[in-house]
Image (cartoon, rainbow, N blue to C red):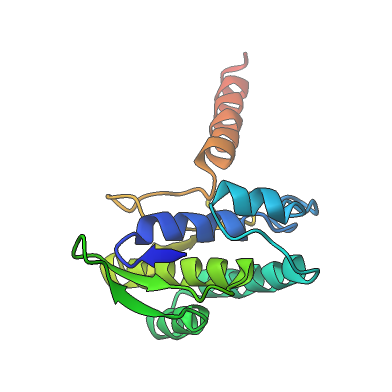
Length: 179
């Protein structure tokens, strides 16, 4: 598996999806119980070891810790640690894209760790540490990496959290008008 270093938006999206599977985001409900489905969805190596799910849960905690404390130096150090399982950096001969290659024996945890590290490094370098945020919805404990062009994303899952806030605001306006 190879991860292109300039594809940080895709990688940051996967890191965001990973951290938002945690029970604290879903009010106690675990959303990463089917690691094989998550791996297939993101074209990751198939989980083969009995401890893969526990390792991914630990990785999720590590990535969440980085997003929650977005200090530039800490993000860079943490992302370098995440990418340390990679095999090496290579230049594709058919293009000018640099990529990080995993060893053939890499696990799903190695692959996801590399992807999260590349996403974090790319966002820190290109967009800045201020793009690591907590969800703006009052009832959500999610976090995200904002890779949008204007950098004004407010919710970890705009279709869910953003919609809930909009519905709550709409109902409050109706109630104030007496309808």
